Image 1 (spheres, rainbow, N blue to C red):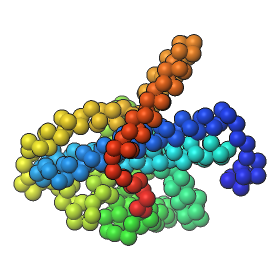
Image 2 (cartoon, rainbow, N blue to C red):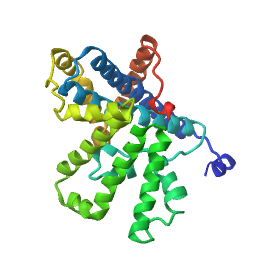
Image 3 (cartoon, one colour):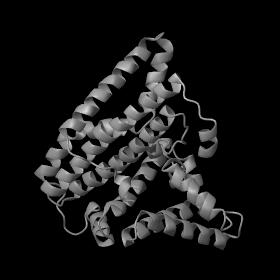
Image 4 (cartoon, rainbow, N blue to C red):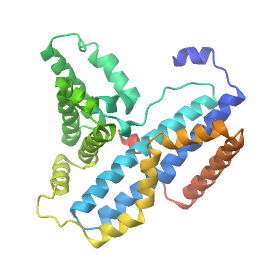
Length: 297
């Protein structure tokens, strides 16, 4: 606990250095990825026509943006904690590689999930009660989760959306997902998470539902326009880098090379971290203020 760490807090050079590294990575996520994705979303909203392609780009950009914004903030908090001798729990575990919605919510915003589990779900009886009480408990948790993010209908429906998906998985569909090839179940999960974030990012439930229907080609929208295609091509490198950075593969590659390079990759990693700090600082000086998304919740 924090109380115990305050009492027995120890600051070491290695822990401080680890904290600095984590803070720089988190800052880079926010400034170089989340802010760039926010810029893409803003340009699509303001300059592209309302087309099927534009709505899908908006949905994808926000889904990646909110991950790098919030996980970047969490990394910075963990890094600052280490600098002062505290050990904060991880909040994200590559959630976009989840193979089910159940798994996604074990890997996304883990502090919020554990709080609702410990202080709402378990006191209500958790999964140890009868079937209908379990459904009731889940319904209460997800209504509260939606309301926690905002007192608006789009957040309430977003919570109910996950309640339904989790209920379907509890009824047996998760076993089906577990038997599917990993890429298929990952795509399935990411699709529904992206759909959920369309509701989450909307200014109202009406806007969210309108955007969803437009993404499905309903409402007579054109499939694409020149501005949407232009911005997709312009920001494609950002989208690809963000997609790769949302996986553990870059870290695994670095650790694999580090174990075989006899110290060379460690120096390369330090140089890369310094370059990341330089680019991030330059972007901060050159850009405008972009607060963290989750500060509004």
